[in-house]
Length: 60
Figure 1 (cartoon, rainbow, N blue to C red):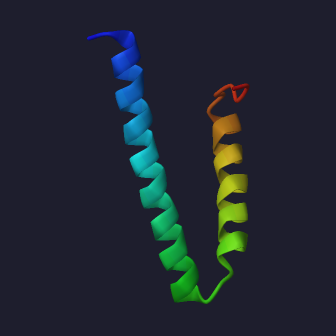
Figure 2: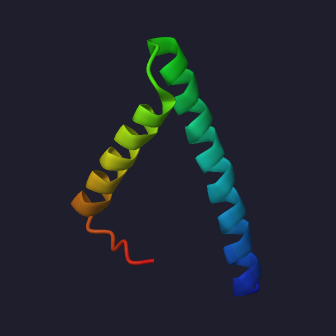
């Protein structure tokens, strides 16, 4: 498979998963009566912490 096609397919799959995560965060915010912006902020903090813990370089 051509590398460019493979990367495009991966990008599309990641985009779908990101939409899924955001929908779940939105639903969580509604259920817990919390502000969606605050939930996303907390999620980003936790994601960044996990990235650092795993040693993933975040220099894109």
